[in-house]
Amino acid sequence: MITMKDVSFHYENKDVLKNINFEIPRGAFMGLVGPNGGGKTTLIKLILGLLKPDKGDIFLFGEPIHKFKAWNKIGFVSQKSNSFNKGFPATVYEVVSMGLTAKIGYFKFPTKRHKQKVLHAIDQVGMKEYTYENIGNLSGGQQQRVFIARSLVSEPELLILDEPTVGVDYENVQRFYELLHDLNTKKNITLLLVTHDTGTMTEYATDIVCLNQTLHFHGDPEAYCSLSETELSKFYGHPVNLVTHEH
Amino acid sequence: MLADIIQFDFLRNTFLTGIIVGIIAPLLGTFIIVRRLSLIADALSHVTLAGIAFGLLLEKKYMVTLSPLYSGMAFSVMGSIFIEKLRRVYQAYQELAIPIILSGGVGLSVIFISLADGFNTDLFNYLFGSVSAVSKNDFLMITGISIVIMIVITLFYKELFSLSFDEEHATVSGIHAKWIHLLFIVLTALVIAVSIRIVGVLLVSALMTLPVAASMRIAKGFKQMIGFSIAFGEIAVIIGLISGYYFSIPPGGTIVMVAIIILLLSISVKRITFRTQRKRDRK
Ligand SMILES: Nc1ncnc2c1ncn2[C@@H]1O[C@H](COP(=O)(O)OP(=O)(O)OP(=O)(O)O)[C@@H](O)[C@H]1O
Ligand SMILES: [Mg+2]
Image (cartoon, rainbow over all chains, first blue to last red; front, side, top):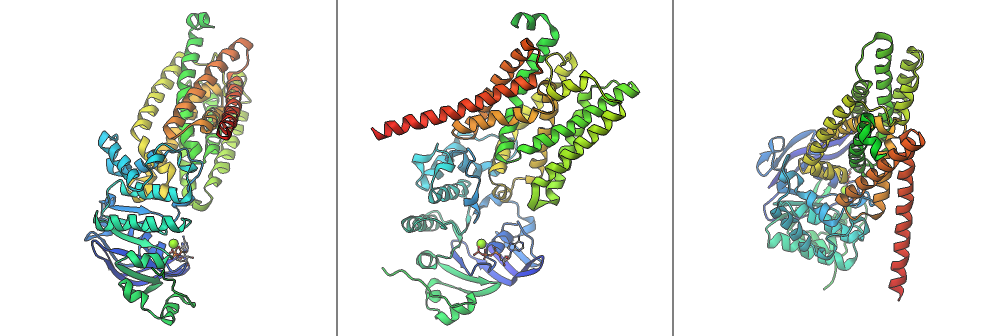
């Protein structure tokens, strides 16, 4: 679905990504991990066309990125979602309906069918009883779910989430992963998830990519978990303890 | 007052213009407030003043009689485009555009005013509004522009709303952020230019922000906030115009004072409902 060929990128005075080659196959649940500053958010911005690579090519759904038009096939929950203006007087319904703005298109108004889609997306993330509450009055974890509903409402084929579980309590993280797992297996949505919470993620993901300037690892969760600590600390540039949850 | 409105053309023009302005100023104001751009209205109103001073100068020195409202509008729109450009240059310090434009507007105004060897009551009317200044032509032009503004906002409501809430998300989903921003700022400039006849340069930003500040306290959701803002704006304009007329005070002053009273009421209403709710919860 997404292919990166030899992509490099630098900010004004800093190389961030070097010769990245990778592919997200349709139907994958890909976990993207790496240290702070490793370039995960930058990689996502490149995929979303918010940044342009210095060299290399990016293909979305088989098309070169500069020709790609079907942006509504891609849903996105940003790392910054949670730093929105808390005083913004929008209800959960209104926030989720923004996910349809571009899909409906200019000079057109939302129809009844669009309204049902919005209500359905809210229901999907378990926020039905808060539909007409102001988003600013919800807890961080609830807000995060609303943002996921906003990206689901346009029925994307690919959902990109950048650290969506920051500030969400353990129990809700579990429920959140179950939701993602459902979306992945039942709705056949391809997922790209950035997270530092490798413990829970490895239980659900089908592919794991480890990024620190270059790709250090690409494989399935078993292979990732069987990496020795010395190998991992090489990726991270400092010693790490891999946290796994016993069940 | 009612009899006077029916009897005197100028009063009727003013009153009807006031009702229109009471809708569009708070309507645009809601978007301005949630985008934290309240001061842009102030900056643009001072640029409009420069345009009006320029128009009055032409009228006085060169006998060009084009309504200063037109030159005010032209300046305001140019100023708004310039603000958008500056905001792009100073991405990380977008608010810098405001003092630059504001001081530029005041500077130009001073130059034009002194070139014309000072103005009299006309300028005073533009500063604080007037109940007798709206001519038939002004009224028609303001109505026309306001209708266009309302149609454009209705058409682009969902884009404006999405962009105000989360620019990055809107851009990623394929909305043309740059053009919608430009459209929005030009609309703001137009609203300011047409509102100035009623509330004046110095108080136009108050009519755009105070009703919104009041409705923000009690509204649930964005659409409701727009509704309350317009209702409060309308109340302020109507009471303000009537009392301004009776006490011979420029309506800008009375309108803003009514808006402030509404704001204070909405704050205390919220307090009281909050307290009674707590009492009920305790029982
Ligand atoms: N707008 C920017 N301008 C300049 N440098 C930047 C910018 N954004 C990020 N960087 C730099 O690029 C590097 C990669 O940043 P990026 O945000 O992609 O990391 P990340 O892997 O998402 O980290 P985190 O886990 O903290 O979210 C960092 O060293 C950062 O300092
Ligand atoms: Mg990041």
